[in-house]
Length: 266
Image: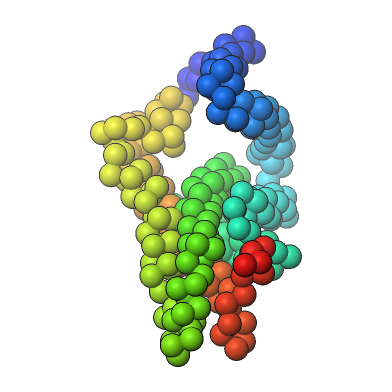
């Protein structure tokens, strides 16, 4: 495979575009200039460190290192699911909920794909495990985060309606049914849009990378289809798990709405 190497100058030119965007956002008073630059800096450091780690992993294949790397990725993803929620769950319960949802949505799907579809030997081959798990975690994390944010925001703005239904004798799951459905629908919109426009509006990242790496276009297309389907399944299963756990957490054993668990004191 012939890959054109990128020099520091090439990356600096790309970074200059981000700096120009930050300057424009500052002139428009969007309030995100610093956040944008910090995010770009984090991405640069994190990806360069990841490159060094992966080079080490590729040189010495050992399942223990794969497991450690996967656990770190899972923990960070579980934290990021709730880190930017407007009304986040308090305590370690929120982190555990995000981590469990990411495990259901990404780890299980990745393991199924590696052992039954791709059938790579051994299944923990880093060239397959790490990129596949990373794509699943990154994309399903967005879907789960959107679902949870929609759910908690809906509860924060409609808690009087929910409490009215509880007062009329409805069970907790009935009182929050509409919000749960709306939350799940919102979480699945990104992957639905991605599948709808793939190959027409956008050329997905994995397919682009494989083509740049020299893979046959048809083989790259088949891998991209596989990835999109896996992300769709992971986003769906993960969002359902997260929304159900979050919904149940919002009510106590006596089925009273507990807004204090998401930092709201009406």
